[in-house]
Length: 386
Image (tube, rainbow, N blue to C red):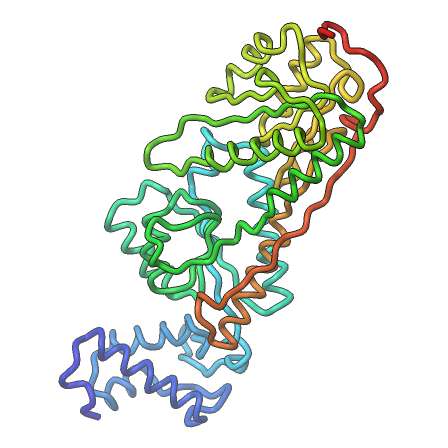
């Protein structure tokens, strides 16, 4: 069959794949039947054997055929059902699991997210593949990953460490990311659908319920490398929301009660200096790694948590429930986010809708009340000025 004389090797492979795919869909090659041998197809289409092999490999990747070593290729009996499944790539930056950055909160958040994606895949019919990619990609590495990831219906990125890869990939397939891409003209889906104003409202209302008279917030804003996304603006805005909410509720906030740290190793030292004579009744830890440090500080100062000082926080993982079962925190579940992403992707694949039409619902929150804030404020704290 002289159909490929004017085509390049790449176009010959693509054209052959489309012909074989159509024969399968039209029933020329019935479900369960064996396809003609590679040599037979090479003779029919006047193509080299390698081109036939590439076409069959592509059909197998897409679920049309099943190749049995030594026997040949067969039409997949379940190809129609499998072809309807959305194929999702979950991209997890290697740096996030390195020895330098590894921590319980990152692990639990990623585990929640991945479990949500898998639960959604089981519920709505999708295939999820997990990839660990070093964020320091060189140009050729990035091109190889682009070729691999563009075969999926969508890619979900755990964070913003791989912005160049996300930006290029988003021009070819829908990309889910927790923050905006540098170029506003490139479409993407922001899955960070957490209403942080609502989170802060829950914490302020809880502080009122505890009967506190003063409150503070501590944030960690570490200096980041120039090529790494910094969440500083996000944490600053959330701290500001908390301060404003307390002031509206007539809960006193002072500059010395509301602190930002750029070095996690100096948090206790700076708390010691700032709270030497006075400290707040209620403290919001505006970062997942601060409660542990604050607990140690309180123990060393002889402060009884839940009575002398109350501690609350928010987290997307289950760190506090695991390490500090007595801490009060707002749980922002990435599990639900993962399920919602799969549902949205499956809908977009089946209904063939554009990226701009993909919508994710806002995730609900749960305030988990524990002993760190549960007990009523009943006595004057030691060392406090009147």
